[in-house]
Length: 88
Image (cartoon, rainbow, N blue to C red; front, side, top):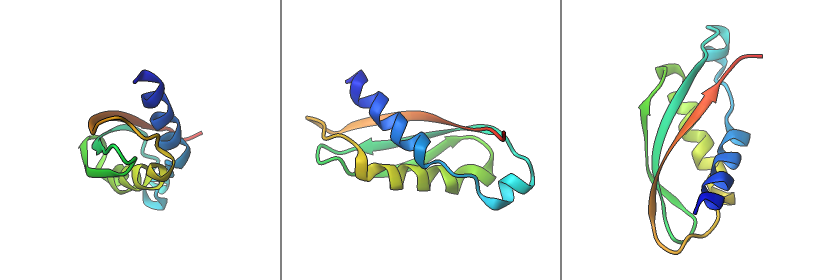
């Protein structure tokens, strides 16, 4: 299970992009996202639990885009994952 979680986290981080507004406002934050990973690898019920409102859409998009690469699991599971947005 932890192997799957690490894969999910990697794919989400790879797909996390800053919105132009958040970048312009120089916002850095961790957005905590919760979603259900279905046994077929698809996701549903994506919710933002915490983090700056200017990063919410970006976090949801990151999960949606990354979901095409998520592993298949034996049963549906709820996942809560932090996504760190940090300017370089």
